[in-house]
Amino acid sequence: MPFIAKELSVKDITLIENNLLAFFIAKQNKIGEFQPIVLYITGDDYSSLTLIVLNKNNSPVGGFNLCGGLDSGPYSTGDSLTTYHANSYSIINPNQIITYRIDQSDFADSVKKPSIIDSSVFSSHIDKDGKIRTKQTVKAHFRKAK
Figure 1 (cartoon, rainbow, N blue to C red):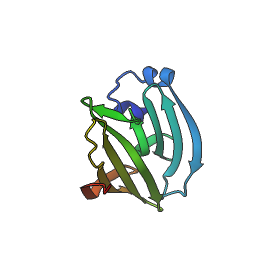
Figure 2: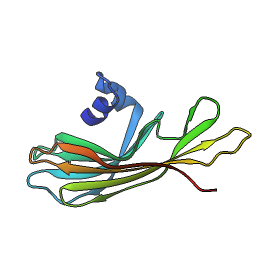
Figure 3: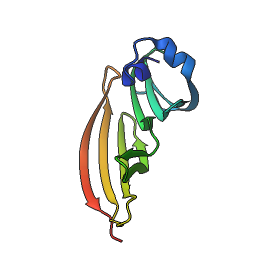
Figure 4: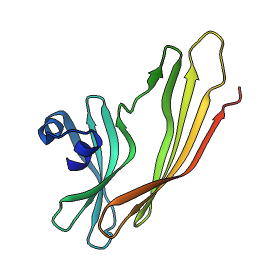
C-alpha cells in the first residue's frame, strides 16, 4: 500500500485498500535480509506488475513498477495522436532490474504519417537499505519506416 499510495499521491491508504486488488505472482531470491516479491495490482484506471521489497518484518521498504501503472492503457494527445506501450519487459537479477520499454504513437488523421517510436532502457538497483534507485540509461526517438 505505501508504494502505490506514494506513486498515486494518495494520503488516505484506505482509498487504495478499497479500490485496488493485488495478486501475488512470484517470490524472488532474497537480497541480504530483504525479500523481493512481484504483485499484479489492478483497479479503476490502474494496472501494474510491481516488484515490492519487504524487510525482515515483511514491511515494504521499496517498490518498482516492472510495467504498467496509472492509466496504463492507450492515451490520446489532441484528436489525432494515440500513444500506447508497444512492448515492455524487465530482466531481474539478484539486486538489479533492467527494464526495456517501447512506446508507439500513431497518427489518426487522414494524411497517414509514420508511427513515432520511443525506446527506453532503465537500470534499477536495490540498495543495501532495500530502496530501489532507477536511472534511465538509453532513450531513442525515431519514426517507423512504412
